[in-house]
Amino acid sequence: MYVTTIIPFFYIYRKHFTESHKVFRIRSIMLVVMKSFDYTIFEGCESMKPLNGIHHVTAITSSAEKIYHFFTYILGLRLVKKTINQDDIQTYHLFFADDQGSPGTDMTFFDFPGIEQAVKGTNELAKTSFRVPSDEALLYWQKRFDKYQVKHFPIINLFGIKMMEFHDFDNQEYMLISDELDDGVKPGIPWQLGPIPLEFAIRGLGPIFMRVSHIEHIDHVLTNLLTFKKTGEDHFFYRYETGLGGNGGSVIVEKNTTLGIGRQGFGGIHHVAFSVNDTTDITAWIDELNHLGKRHSGLVDRFYFRSLYTRLYPGMLFELATEGPGFIDDEETYETLGETLALPPKFRNQRKSIEKLVRHIDTVRSNLTFEKEYID
Image (tube, rainbow, N blue to C red; front, top):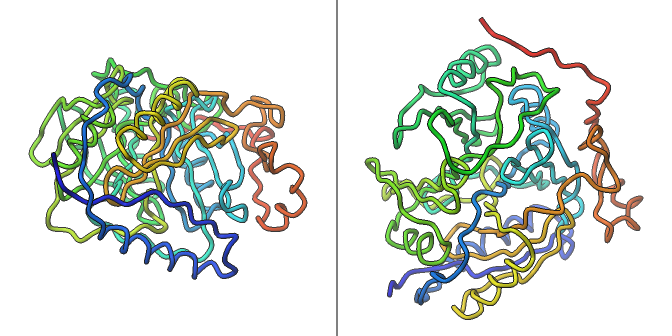
């Protein structure tokens, strides 16, 4: 058994406070206090059905408008849902994904008012990665980032896979990862009408990168609690896979004992979600976490999917999310995904008041024509 620390699961609702900066200060204080609690890791979840892979990653941005522009016009990902943070209705929740909003392809963003910038460090979800079809696609993205002055770094080879790091205007850290040799979890479908030539376009999420100071602890969490298997080691990086594995079913962990503890804020990741089939799986995980004495949220109905949240390692919030129902619903058709302020049914009787809380952002694209942009 390992003795270590965990952050218990808490929901903090902004509606209980009138000033947004107080909320963030309380969040920060609770994060520090909760990290001081010790607990013992018990037996694992070896009997559970393996997780399918990455479902989505949620991060925090300083500007919903800027992130919409960056993901739409620079990265060529499709905004498939413009909605609200269901726990904080004055905050946008934007979902960027493949052409059809498939699970395993979407990165989402909150824009909490008044939040401070993230402090990068250890014991955090560090980088989101996106899958591109080939090594050649990485060369295209190098030229594209040069053209649009996006900060990026040389292509590297990690675990025999070529990848390239880049940052956005908030210094949010991302990786592009080549699918050239991948035979694991299937990718999504690139945004067909977007600006990126399809042979180079992003087609889903790759591994989530974690940065930790206690490799034995995260190894236990991933392999004994979350059904991953350790499949590789490359200097200070460790690769874990679940389900069909490959880029869409992987976590890459960086061991780092020199940085300070990371602090959440804009430019950082809020949580990562792993995919399960349906609510039957969620119920099984609830039973297992109860059996192991782990704190969790219970079943949460997000309308677009069903979720379960838990903290199993300091500084990291994990979500398990179902693969359906999905983003094409009674409010928006395939053609108009992400163009209106979409609200789950339980919020629709509050539409007028919510529309006064969140500023209007024009995200209509169905009347636009994007030319595929080849770069010499």
